[in-house]
Picture 1 (cartoon, rainbow, N blue to C red):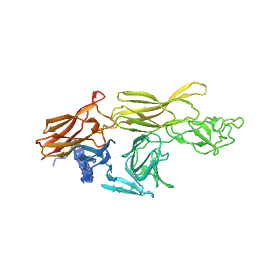
Picture 2: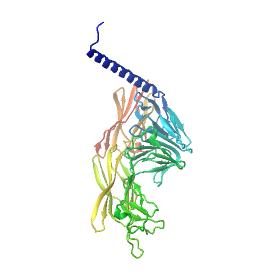
Picture 3: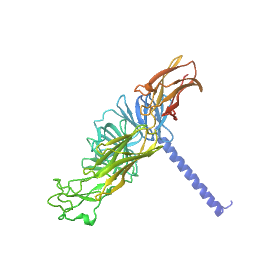
Length: 477
């Protein structure tokens, strides 16, 4: 028998390693595929869901859903439309009020225990608060009452919470589509959720949610500290309280001294400011009153963005508070009313990213004016919500319903019937009816054919043609 040379031994060893690696990969892939939920779920009509890119979708006429080889659930509607809704999905049925959960997720209880769910879970009663971790930096609350501590955001039944790595938060359900850039706590009757820090609080019990399947959250609280000359001058030994804050939000308390934005402000319980760190003459408090400006959140439609902001300026130090919006072909600077809390920007392009910057021009003590940026927020407008559904097919007619986005109203458009790839008929869209709550119902004359397609074409908005891909398909056997 011929002996193996050293080179042959190396080649044989490499070949054996490659074979082993391939076998291991095949086993891993097989286990992954075997672990995919193979159930075909029926999706009821009038079901609301977000797709894998957090775009809202209304399944008006129902359909089916099944996980594919990529592990994501895919919906196919009876109208022939398909949607990828990700590895986990939360669906709300507008008719019944039911919430259905799909996929693997982790329910967290008040004693810090965790239960793994998979497949489908259905909820109708929301009187018992429930909390779930769906994935890294993705959470779900079920409750009859969900709000932030200031009650500027309030909803019920369910709320999806998605964090980016910096701690900014996307809040989603059938009522809310908002992004916040300041730290926020969500409150239910049973618990509080500290979003940015990923802490779930039941009374005095604090649960670190990052320990459940890990977290890539990189948020860190910023701590304001006073320099030596501000830390004790004229304070008679008063203690200094360091207040943590993020971005431009301001936190105050009732301690003897509060450091806000680098300044030492007296804020004793009686509000007199006696420990302000400044020399007072004749009992008069010379400490400047606290001022603050910040973006709270933003919500969008297909053609507008509503910005929610907060301005505290008791001494009118801000000459101007403004927002700059830039994205697509749009760029503008808008002065805000300091007494209001929201502003809606209109005439925007659908499905487009816009950068919103909040800035101030401030009058300084020497009479000069300085300008600075306080907050920045990235918001994406919604896709145009337009849907065609084939409602009935008779021996001589095809009936359809067209619902178009009332926030992005076309000047004109055509609705076209194709049968087996051939154009059979077209008509102008009734814009007024199609943007109503019930949509526009009409019909085409029809003789025979196996593949029926009704498509929206030649859409004109503000004098310009826009690209739309809206159609309904069916097979007629």
